[in-house]
Amino acid sequence: MKKIIRNILAVLLFAAIFCLNGCSDLDESNEETEIESGSQNGEQEKDESDDEKVLNAEATEYLLKAGDSKELTLTDISLAASKTLKMDGEATWTVENPYICSINSSGKLTPLSGGETVVTGTLSSDSTKKAELKVKIEEPNRGVSSDPFDLRTISENIDIFCCGDSIMRDYSASDSDQYGLGQALKEFFDETKANVVTDIANGGRSSRLFYNEDSRWPEVKRRIQANNEAGKKSVVILSFGHNDQRALTDCDKTYGAQFTFASENANETVAGTHYDFMEKYIVEARELGAVPICVTPFVRGDYSGSEVSAYGKHDWSNKTMTGDSTPRGNYPAAMKAAAKKQGAILVDMTELSAVRVAEYNNAGKEKYFYVDSDNTHERTLGGLELGKIVTDELKKNGYLTSYIKDCSPRIMVDKSNLAFGRILANATKTTSFRISNFQNKSGTITITAPSGFGLSLSDSGSFDSVLTIETDENFMGTEVFIKFSPTEVISYNGDITVTHSSVTPDFGNTPAGTVDGSALKIALSGAGKELSVSGTDFTVNWPMISGGGQLFGCRNFNF
Image (tube, rainbow, N blue to C red; front, side, top):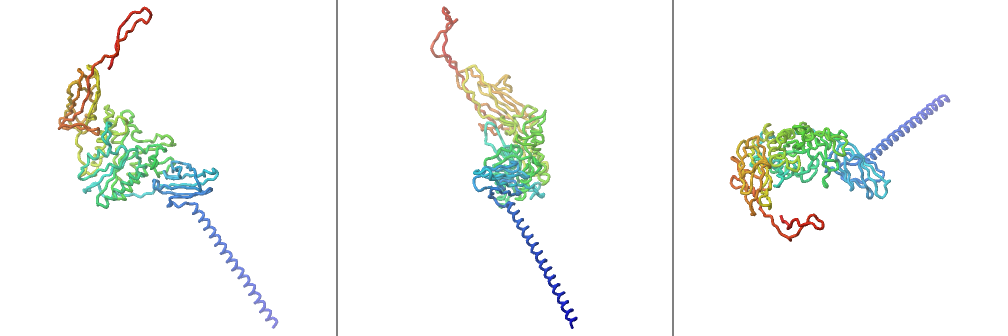
């Protein structure tokens, strides 16, 4: 019995020990679970802390506290993506790399280019209290888009929106004869089928600034949308480059920076380059239902030998803008690359205009293409030449062929009146005007001057009352000199008449004068005057020593 009892106790003891060990293991197991859970909670708390460090890019305003070190990642480099930074009190703001983003005194942060930089805010009341924001601008990642309709087959009425800078915009008549490409394009499109819209382009606009300014690209998009609602198709002509070559500090007071690098920023990113903006235009136009046409920029009159130079062709691959650390790159090549990736229509006006401008320059006629004040902006003849380049290229590739018309030949005079003032009878005074020719195949210009005036093709040549000039397709233009030679003390008012055997001359984009039938008239005014003698007699003695004799007497002469 005692043996049985011992065995039972042993079993119970064993069971008790097992139970204790099992409970201990279970407790340890539970404890490990709680520790892991605590660890996960700790990680979650850490993640939440990281989330607080990374600012929400959807917000438009952020409050930074002294000691903060935050991060902000943006995917858009437009003005619309700007943010406002504030601190607890008035602060000053600085940015490590101003090419990546700008920050003004009010804390407005505007993304400009791809890459990373640090913005620092410092409390004005205590310069030791600072906050930092690491800003990252991501690279674009666009897919390939396509035109919403085919410019080879379209037949309905369209609007053509001209987007660009001072090369594209409209100009009122002025003595400079300045004339925009958009104005010229109106002469090459059938107005009953294509409405060429030229009131949105404006001077000083780069691909960046035009995109950001509310009355430019946003207005184009609004008008395209209105056309969509009205069932009308839209075409967008895009031409930028001149003003992309501005310095970082060249800014519009409302809409900010103008500059871009061509294809790659100094830090080898793409966001915010000319390429990036051109691709944005292409994709956004198509998303709205419009067809984009890219036109590379018109050349500057800068030469290397008999050809337009690389700089004239907007190739800054070896040229550095003041303040930059690296060259800007080749702007026409950047536009071509964007158009090629997206399969967009492109007119290489840079290369085509370089050929035509070189022809004018080599003939000594560059100033018939450009305005007198610079070698960048075109006058009427230059604008018409550019319009012909664009439309000829479109026709050659089968685009809008039923919309493009032949532009009428033009003989243009750049003065509507010439005032000589009053000059002494039998004296002479010479001035001049220009005649230019667009697409005239052949003919004769006849210029007739009234009495008292003579005409010549040289300021040192012989002057006659009638001058004739034979024209053909090679005639670009000429300067005509007028000499005023009054023989009497009378007014000499009249008109120079200019006629052509097949074309009625016009005044280009200078203030219009009179066209009477087929004769253009330049108003002349002048007067002869006599030498008048008045005043008080006086005597000059010579030599001016005592005893000298009287030499002569004089009066005051009035001219």
